[in-house]
Amino acid sequence: MEFFIPIIIGGLIGLAIRASMNAGKNNAPKEYMYSCSQPQLIEAIKKAANTLGYEVNRVDPVGGRIRLGVGASMASFGEWMDIQLMETAPNKTKAIISCVAKKGRENFSKNRKNIEKLLDAVSQSFSA
Image (cartoon, rainbow, N blue to C red; front, top):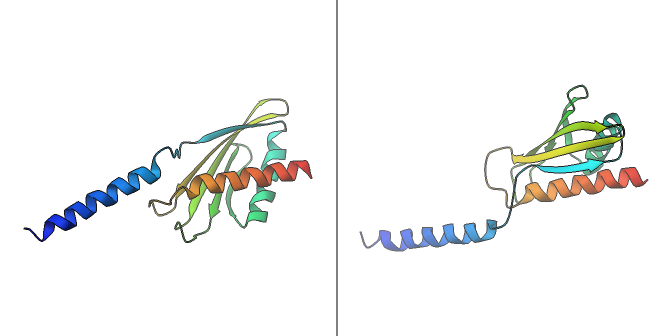
C-alpha cells in the first residue's frame, strides 16, 4: 500500500500541471466576418490550405461546409478543421471554424494555432 502513495501523489501533481497548462485555452468554435462572397471565401480557404499543406478533405459549396485535414506533428496526431460559411448579406460572409483532434487526444493548443495560421493565410490571399 505504501508503494502506491508516491504513484498517486505523482498522478495528482500531473493532473494539476495539465490543468494549469490548459487554463484559459478555449477550443470553442471561432466566428469571423469577411467582406466577400461565399464562393470567393471558399476559393481563398482552399488556396490557403494548399499553401499550408493542409488536406482539403471535403468541400460543399451549396451547404457552405469545408473540412480540412491538418497533418500530425510533435504536439498532436493531427486535426480536423471544420468550417461553416454563411453569407449574411451581399459580400458579407461569416465563417465559423472549429478544430478537433483526429484521435480524440489532447493536442496542447495546436487547434488554436492551426486556426490562426489558416486565418493569416486567408488574409494574405485577399491582400495579394
